[in-house]
Length: 82
Image (cartoon, rainbow, N blue to C red):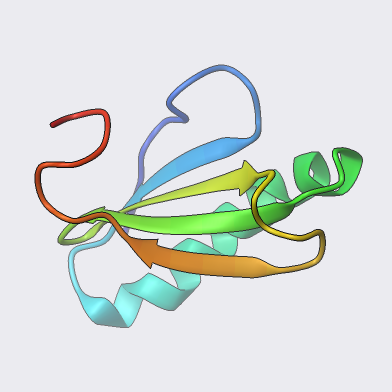
């Protein structure tokens, strides 16, 4: 399992890379734990986005109600790397 460095210096976003699906739950749970305090402080929820196969972004997000975690899939050709 590889947890990549946050995309910026705040603790509200983590990018996670996994090599296989058996690592996914532990990796995402760890990322959520890393940003949970920031979500509580806002207070907002957490959004998990699958950006590419094996790559996920976990971030606090105002569109997610406090106390919830939502998941989404980013279609190819969308997002910041498009």
